[in-house]
Image (cartoon, rainbow, N blue to C red):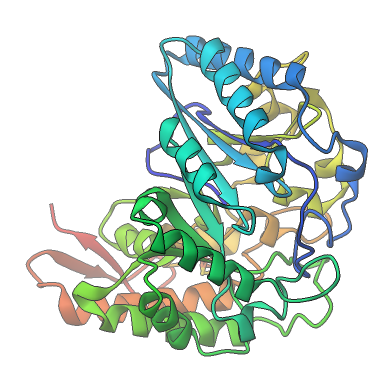
Length: 396
Ligand code: SF4
């Protein structure tokens, strides 16, 4: 999942799928286990000519919109499967093709192949990385399993411990942790587990389901509502020891009139695109599990500019909030949720399937702010919808 912190602007971020295979087979994975098999027909490792075409398209995009900075988020599958020599070649190629552009390189990994040499490579190239970790092994390994079905989290934690023993590099380069929510556990316990294990920046992701595509055993929204409320309460109670949890921070900031972009909270999808290992340009890799027109490749870096997909996939139209969201007192913080979670088989003109959970945690935040933020700084207004929830806004 991509996070940007700038307001509306041209596309300046790509999720680049440099590897199309993985050494894990997570049960909830939107790439392998949710009905989209397009990965099978793409190169397992991105070919050099696709990397070159991506570099040229980034340079073209930056020139067109006078962009000085651009983000390339390396993804998979598992991106470390490309190997170190190949990774260095990819980096050199992209940087060589984008002179004058500050290319920020980040990478999302399951962490199992990470070693000190990878960290040195990241450091040498000014990269940071994120790790996917769903909490303690007894929770995470219900889903994060190797291809043989065995849990992977103990091995990951041992790996992290070894890297931390070797010095501060691991924590210095770690941008954050992505945690897919397992709603059978207490959200507060998960927050405390991360803090106790030395992770001070993480993100909760809600499993990718929508009104027509739900994973087997998906329990409905209520357990997610409880989880998020427990997690928020635990996080808020930690006060100055609270880690960064972007989902909560971005929602809270919206109550103060600031709304950094987070695609899980209705962030503008014109800002970023996904490029597959065969050069196909898509809206978002997660959107592929909506299938239909969103799983059809229409554009490629060999022939099309990166921003062509705004029109090709009707992004302006499909990301518009639903009528219910437009009338909701919490639209500003929730943003209508993550676009793939809004799909009903025909359109995205719906609240997120997680609406009830997002609304409830927004209510919790509003209550916390009412109690803690000095009245001279905030105003609580009744909403257009007449809800008693009110919207908090910074006084002029
Ligand atoms: S809480 Fe529900 S209705 Fe309100 S903006 Fe979010 S998804 Fe839409």
